[in-house]
Image (cartoon, rainbow, N blue to C red):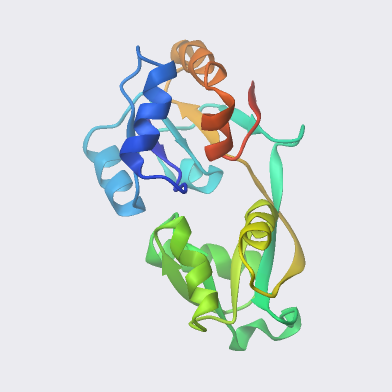
Length: 209
């Protein structure tokens, strides 16, 4: 199983979290989308655990997903987070937006522009801890993050953060398998993950989709 889901801990540590509960499955966690895509192309795995747009982009996985759930929902809201005042959503064409890169330069740009309905300029980072720094040091006008992450930043920082609701929702982390026979094996695996590991993946539990 390949995992591409940037978290607040290093990939090797995430591997240990998952492997502890799924010893029968060889798990490799990637920190960068480029490394993940290259390895998936070179040696396709039996399953991938990632963001839905990443799964949809991958030609090896077309079967239904095992879907993560948080607070009984399979999706989460996304917002634009700025400093001191809300960003003007009607004037996004002139704005620079910070994002966590999950698709690669060109696909990520196309994806965000489509989501926001504007030709924004993007500043991409590969680590979750770096995206808030883009805003803190004035490199961007706003960052595009989940409501969940915005609330985390608000609790843990002393910054005057303001979230602008976009009426945009995206699925939580999901797992795709490349054949129906394997699905039950991986479903048992994710359902053995403890609460700490699930929290790192932004979910409470899992269900067949």
